[in-house]
Image: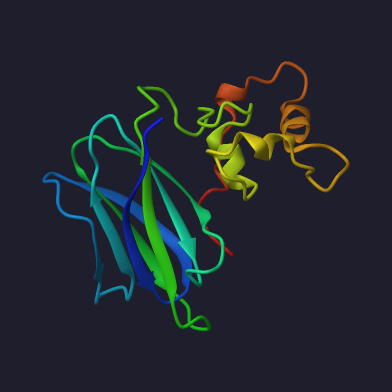
Length: 171
């Protein structure tokens, strides 16, 4: 697995991801301010064959948390618009990628090999690259893997599990 950090950014606290957009021309990774909406725009070149994740932290000494974003590189620029809310004076972002997925749905793909699809792991605040997360207690007497398996119910197909709740990041 090729997992790398691409960029590190400092921002005021993050409220929500508004939308993702793709432009025709790839561009450098960066942050811009949209004066019309007041949002910050995180953008990067989406290289084909890579799957991108965004991590955030309020302090570089605190643990990094995966934000609820998974994007496939397509050769176009990718951008996320973020609204800001004060109390925290800063917020750090880093862009991570893997070239492990070659087609298919990145939300349903198990990047760690631990049995949890990436979308489900992100929805539950887990690291989609840490296979040990699946065996950790979920607080309900079950492990995260057992909780995931139980959530499927009888005859449910894990490939069709939709992580629709992956729209807003709240630390």
